[in-house]
Image (cartoon, rainbow, N blue to C red; front, side):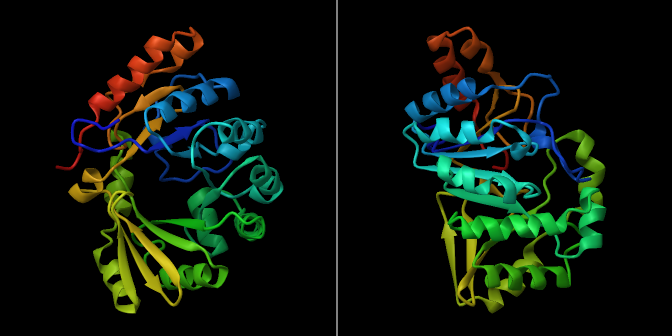
Length: 303
């Protein structure tokens, strides 16, 4: 099914918890509502099943930190039984080494791991925890488990990791055979305004340096027109959603908050659609209506 702007819905990003074992100062918690309710395994499975009926092929599980849920392996296992083609998890990687083998066996295809720095002191200043070694161990275990390609997500923060850190992260990702994604800081909620103003970094200058090193560049049109640079046999991807009409024009993703609300747009939190209530009421018609409403509400944030 396509929205009114001709964009198919091929991807669903599901937040399965608002809880996290880190305390990153920039976190906007996916723009989540503050309602204290959380979906169980069967509810998540039902929501993915209906999403698949609407043409969704890719499922990304996120949080908060999804791996802190004791039933995360069961969630992946349930989704893997449904007609979807790709299941991935975005994680901070702190407990990944302990769970990655079970997740891979349950049907996980890929993993995205947050890695803003390779400097332990900088890592602790960003996350509030001394957990970098655990994250690096998790990356190694994910590679060994065959979750290919492993993607490393680096959020660029002005004055913190926007200098020589980037070269180090590129070299690290190339050495590991991982894909590095350099991500622009977003302004999702009003309470993030101060963080955005202080730490937002336009990625143009960084991207230009990478372009000069690259042997080729590709554009992922089906993934928000992201540019992928081929560098020394590896890949560096640039994700810059802010004020980017191309990012919006080619967006094929619908989001689900941890409280069971469909979120038509990353940048908005004022048009959420409750789909968990009809799931709990076992009202098939209302479930489908919720998806149809959310798709109807989708429009490019940056025109």
